[in-house]
Amino acid sequence: MENKELLQKAKEAKSAEELMTIAKENGVELTEEEASEYFARLNVSGELADEELDNVAGGGCQTSVNGEKYTVVTSGQRCFNGGYENNIETEFSVSGNAVKVPAYTTDHLSLRCTWSDFSSEGCCGYCRHLQFKGATGYCGKSAK
Image 1 (cartoon, rainbow, N blue to C red):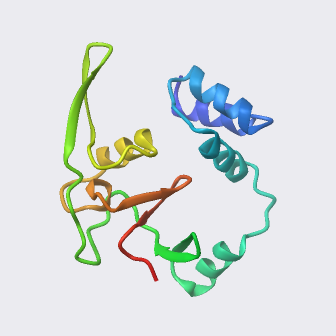
Image 2 (cartoon, rainbow, N blue to C red):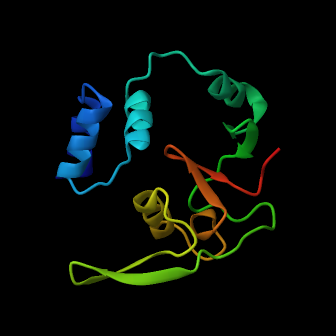
């Protein structure tokens, strides 16, 4: 299934559980928490959350995690804080195919692998300090 078709199908999901089923049928792994957050993002009411409003109003591009603010990053962004550390890869076999994955972290594994596909050495997508809040990537060394 093409990405556009899959996205359209995801947008039509009536619940986070249905979104998880669609993802599973198409070989995409989602946790219940990820499915709930993606479902919420796909079904936005049109109003911005306080955090989103702050970012739009010039408050920077930040996300809050456990009461601390972190800088949102993109996969191809070069390190801005001097804390870059390569996410050393490990290799294992899945159905007879060699797969390289980040060795330091396993949360949001499919999302991490996608980010690293669009990155190069020195970019956020390859950094071990990359963390996720749902689908939003942020620098774990940028807490304020």
